Length: 456
Image 1 (cartoon, rainbow, N blue to C red):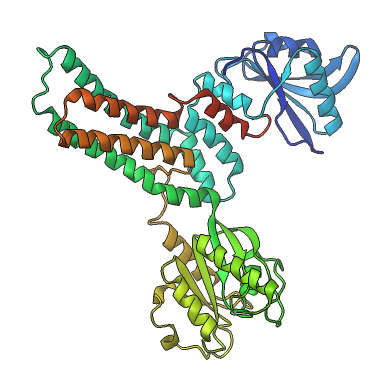
Image 2 (image 1 turned 120 degrees about the vertical axis):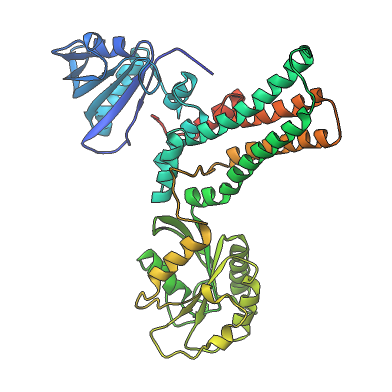
């Protein structure tokens, strides 16, 4: 994967702004920038991590006033010599400076190539590289905190400790087989079994954080369901703070699902407003009802909306039965008017998950936020003590490692020779190595970095 040419890219958004940054990295970064930059100082003579004011020239034509920041490898993001040009942020100025750099032989960077060079230079491992993009894409406080913790090396540390234990046992077995006079395997199987249980237990804990980690990163997929005209769209609008959904007194106004992301108490909710669920002969409405049921079945959380001013009907009862085996919250809407619905009507539902709410006044909003946190996060989240798996690739590798350790345990129970253990021990070691990038195929690494934004 590694190349030693010099690359450049616009590191800020291509639009009108006060400042636009062009990043240059590679062996010719300072030499080429020095050729184009005119100021009181030569960039090549400046100490690392210092800046100078000057102008960029194409021959005798001035292109822009800039501040040039010089960073000399290996103590840079990419571990290479790097120059950043702080230009004026106009698209035309940035385009002309980029064209000049390309004319001087510097190649436009591919998406994620700066971070790829940081990985190849050994500055960060693959979990750190992926955390960089997670920080950029974070849409809530929890996702940002989790990404920053991973960027600091928490996951790498946990994986490295597990791999060290595995490689120690593998090395001991191979040493004992090669040198039985100095290394004894008597009773070793029982000791190894205990070690395998310990490592597998740690892997299980990481795997179990996968659901919470996915929710932290991607948000809670939340389906708002109910029969027609109970206030689903009003609740959608209350949560989003906008008139996102059409609200009328006419039943069946919502014919399709409507999706919206919101930040809610440090979490992200992917809200899905659905069509009212009822028996219908209308072909178009029936499609909406089918989609509503599909959204409910795929959701992490179902919010069932009931109308407190009316008694339950057969559609409400049907929906109550449908949600009982799912994570749900029942929102008894219109709490600001005299209720008709009674506690006896809601027998069989978890009372802790029934909230009185008013989409009109906003009553119950805080209780809803706290209840969602309680349902989806087992304890107060502390990113200093807990490593969260937020990446599907990481979870898949952990599962493969656990399966390999299970095979070791089976070999021990079957009384097989110690040399059989090392095959599956090394398979677990390799699977864990994929997470941090120590045994990652080039094509997979290329795919990961191709998903990064340009200039990072």
